Amino acid sequence: MTGPNICVSLEGTTVKEMADEAARANIAGADMVEVRFDRLYLKKPPHEPVEDENGEIRHVLPPEDQWHVLEAGEVNADESITSLKESIPLPVIFTVRPLNEGGHFPGTEDERLEIMKKAIASGVTTIDVELSVEDEQRKEILDMASSAKVGIVSSMHNTESTPSASELIELVETHSTEGEIFKFCGTVNDHQDALQIVEACHELRGSKHNFSMMALGNGGDWSRLHAPVLGQALVYATLRSEFKLSNKGLVNIKDLKSAWTLMEY
Image 1 (cartoon, rainbow, N blue to C red):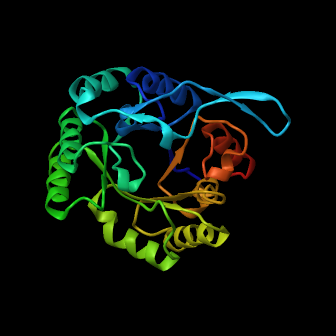
Image 2: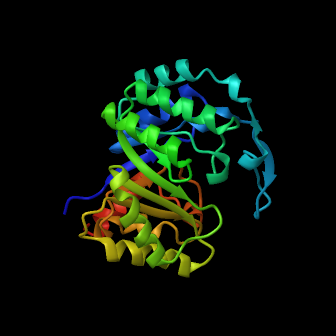
């Protein structure tokens, strides 16, 4: 069975960190990486000492919602896009995630879309375009990407919950033709939410639609781990390897590939 492509989402907050992560992802066997350009506006703070349950002191980063966020004009988009393109050896999904979908971009929607247009003009492999973008602006981005032969991930992110399986299926059937892949990432509040994604994927497998569906939270990794038998075209993984990573719905790329081998996917 030919498995889905694996995309490692880069979590660096500088161009150099992202380039280093991309090199590691390449070695780990990723097919592509996601450049979360909005993360360049985060300023990573120093590690803080924290006492764990065993009374040992560990130095950890504070939660990201406590990190300082730069102003939109403090990042040179042109230079950053050029540097990323020159330093990343894999195909790239270019993403500038807005605040209302769990991202960090601090500027206006027009400023965000302008960066996406710059990325398309640079010849990036694929651009992530949210369904939440206003219709006229969204059409402009999609047309520009199509003309430049840049791939399109049509995406939706729900930071509070996960729709029902029937609603997810309708989303895929409605929007999968707007790009090469339709992506949905929800938030799991209980295992029933996680099962909604698995059920939707199972119903859609073997269809003409290319999709990638997952969630954050405990159980959100189920659709990633079983993606090959659920008909998913693309799976997002991470380079992170901290304890209880699965509770966040994330999966390390090496663990993902090992699981697929173990389950004979």
